[in-house]
Figure (cartoon, one colour):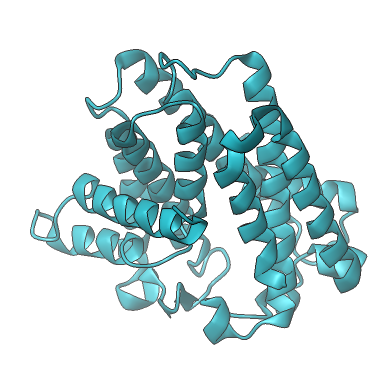
Length: 297
């Protein structure tokens, strides 16, 4: 398959898996479940599920186990977006090209949607398509990535940094937690879902994948910062220019637009270099690194 064909096939699997692991809209309480499905289904780049599937294919993971892991990752990601958009945080009205959950419904519903999606992610990870040892490993990876030393911690730093002048090193620390931790978990969870297969990852393989994920995770945020100042809201799917308006430190505000573009290109090269030990078997991961960075080309 071409990369485009592979991407379409994986995205179709992910959508089906999310439909399966989310409660139906008719299940009580119906409004909450309807809002959860509104937030999750039919939109988004699905970068984390794609990374999960690509890493899992590298290590011989079953498609069913990757579906469960990918669905869990996307639910955690969407929960973070729903909460991030609320008035107590970034107060945004647009996400994935449609009204945010608190605008479409109300603030209490949005809060509960995020809470419920976080819980539902771990329901997916304890599906019987994963062996008990795999369940434990993947639950730990996702919990660490989404907690106070991962995504939530990065968001706390982000909120505390509004109006401040961060150094480049401080900004990188924030984004390695806020954005990078869950992207790293996507790669690690996909690889670990292949435990027990003939291509099961060893310590050296996991180190190489960690280096790849670190580069891709940072590149993703650098590109987001670039797009925030170079793209309109309709194309971006969320409110453009909001970071600058809200006084948030970004790579563009700290090192400039041209240097940010150069950094994104360097991070793509770093990601490719980290995949060298795998040879052609890592083609999909390499193509995903290109996809992340080429959004600004």
